Length: 42
Image 1 (cartoon, rainbow, N blue to C red):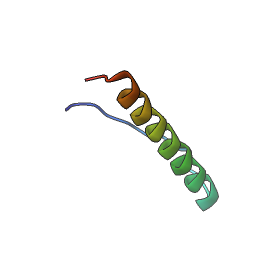
Image 2 (image 1 turned 180 degrees about the vertical axis):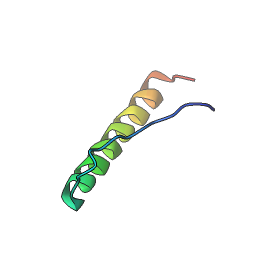
Image 3 (image 1 turned 135 degrees about the vertical axis):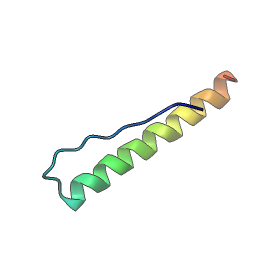
Image 4 (image 1 turned 90 degrees about the horizontal axis):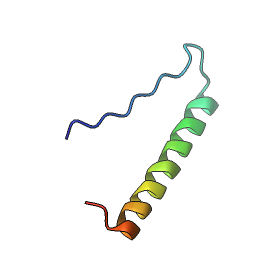
């Protein structure tokens, strides 16, 4: 569809940082999906 999500973590990153980034991104995507379904956005 042409939509892109880019991540640019620092060059020095720990596993804990990566886990936190992915957890937050997952929450954000879940909230976005819920909003789309609620608003019936197409």
